[in-house]
Length: 88
Image 1 (cartoon, rainbow, N blue to C red):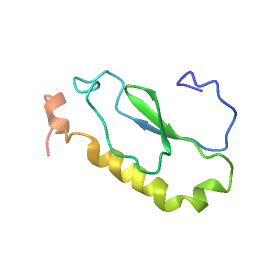
Image 2: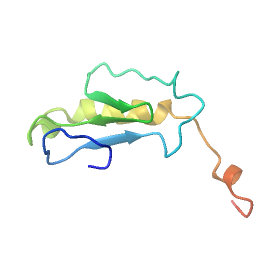
Image 3: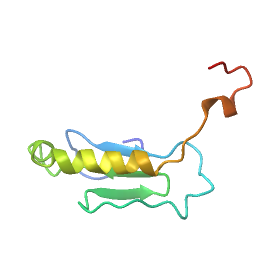
């Protein structure tokens, strides 16, 4: 596994990643996860790993909620800020 995770093999794993570089706000970044499904792997990423093949269907609403909270916790970035030839 690419993140150095030596855990048991699973059929699926959702990786919530903040990018390849450590960001300025890594130490303070946080978001609510009332379900407890998300586990931090490092400051730039977390995972949601189902216990078994039936869990994703049983906890679909909680998994969708975690993904929505994750997306909304990320800063909005203008892609043109990183490229000189960007045209919108």
